[in-house]
Image (tube, rainbow, N blue to C red):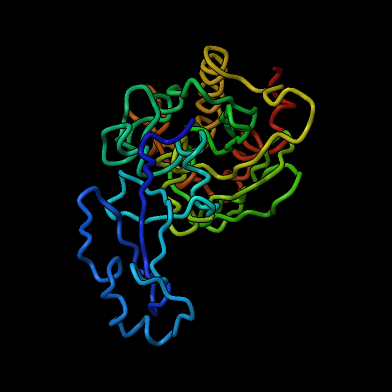
Amino acid sequence: MRCPLLREAQVKFCRASAYTKLIVRTTDTSNNERCSTEAWSRCLAAKQHKEEHPSVARCPFLQESLVQYCSGAPISKYVPYSDAKIARCTDDRHKYCDVFAELASGEGSPKRTPSGESDRHVDIFHKALEIPDDVWLSPNHLWLSASADGYWHIGIDAFLAGVLGRVDRLGFPTSRGVQHPAAVLTIRDIDLHLVFPSPLQITESNSHLRASTDRITEEPYVGGWLLEGKWATTDSPTAGLRTGESARTWMIHEIKRLTEFVQHKNALSTQRLNDGGIVAVGVAQHLDRQDVLGLYNEFFCPHASWRIPL
């Protein structure tokens, strides 16, 4: 589906000028401008190029073109129809655009959860159960978003985002091509390798997150997406994944497992609230290296599905 913020315009510019300045044509464009009248012959830029067969009526260097632009952006950037940059605006991938997500939610930061919760200092239980209806969850807490246009997006779910609290560094060990999508999240100099269980034809990685890793945990289902790709096998793209009520039921079980896991860690005693032991956001930030790796191995490693039957 095309982004509703995408607009088109007719622009004109001078091919003889040292730099290109796009001027949008309007219905009240005056015919008295130099470029559209015989006065163009007095233009110094045009004289320098010495056109062999000049038109008397208008400047031969006056070029017109059809462009597209985002009506929601604070500054309009005109992009030619042939430019690949505009492709994301013409299909379902526009859902992950910051401008569209912010305007669609009506909030300062884009969200896709039903309640629009923006406070990151709530318990993991509350955030983890807010699973968008259009995503599928893998056993190691990665999500896959289906797309009618053939593009798929992958990221970490709110459960994993809540456990981490924040990410210090992000790396993408997989390049473009058919392979298992993977990312490396680093917290406190501990590398956590996350691998999606099914292969994709990877088309793009969200490399912008390297400069703003906070979005990985604050906006896991929108701005924090990690990888984009197309399905690469004949198997069902959602085989072995959960969505809807099935995902929520499984998430309740995962929350119970997490609670049992942290109750055995003395280092987490200060992270338990007085209401019975709710695990706070960023619990992994308070564990030692061995416990973080144990937590990763139990919930987030590529073989996490071995422990929990589908």
